[in-house]
Structures are given as C-alpha cells and as structure tokens.
Image (cartoon, rainbow, N blue to C red):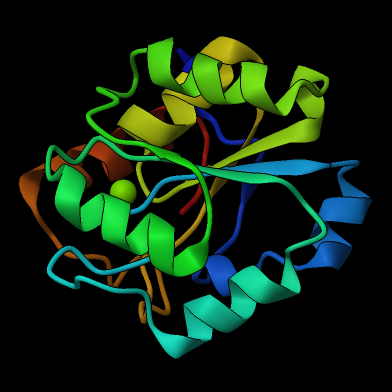
Length: 167
Ligand SMILES: [Mg+2]
C-alpha cells in the first residue's frame, strides 16, 4: 500500500513552488498536472495570474493536464488559457488517460512528474505507472493542516499516516 500511496515528493506549498530547480534535482523532464485544486480552485473557471506566470516559467518542460472533471468546457477553457494539451474525465486512479499523456510525452517514466493534490487519485495513478509523484497543496493553501476537512481528505490524511507519509 505504501508503494501506491506515498508520493516521491511532498511539496508543502501550492504548485508554484515546483521550480526548475526541483525539476533538475529530481532529474525530471516533463509534467502531468491535475487541474482542480492543483492549478485552480474547484469553482474557478480560469487560472490565476500567478498560475499563468508559473506555467510560463516552466515552458521548457512539456506539460499535459489530466483531470477527472467531467466538465469538458471548463477544463478545455483552462487548457486553452494555459496552452497545454489535456484529457478530462480521466477517472484517476485509472491509468488510461494518464498513460495516453505519458505516451505522447515519449520520455522515460521516472523523468515524468505526476503532480496533484490528492493521494487517492493523482499519487496512486502516478505510482501505478512508475512516474515521479509530487503531492502539492491547493492554490492559496499554506499548510496540509489547513486543508479542507472534508471526509475524503481526512481519510487521506489518515491513510498517509498509516504509510508513514507526514503531511
Ligand atoms: Mg485535484
């Protein structure tokens, strides 16, 4: 279970803390990014200027968005705004859509970062495929303790403790 649930890297910040320096240190060459609560808050229809600037700073790395969201119009608009190809309705931790992004990237598995805010979807699918998994906080959040206390997240925190991941 630890093999599936433990991220390779826990960034106790939002995705903007994922810098080129982090990429170089971990020999990473591409990014597969979750959308909701990784790049934008649930309710937002477009990415913030901070996220747009971060994406521009990471343009040297090929990127894909892979979202479980069913709203293709919303995810498509965010992908268009950021100029990043995307899949929605991915049903992570199902591997199918993420694997399609991996195949499009055509890079060694361990050089591709799977980045997201959820252990049970983003981290698990990345670990299932042998990607380098990075857990981040939602935009604007500053601590894992301040994370929304929805039942699912409480459950994820408990699971994380069971596998020795401190959040
Ligand atoms: Mg998410």
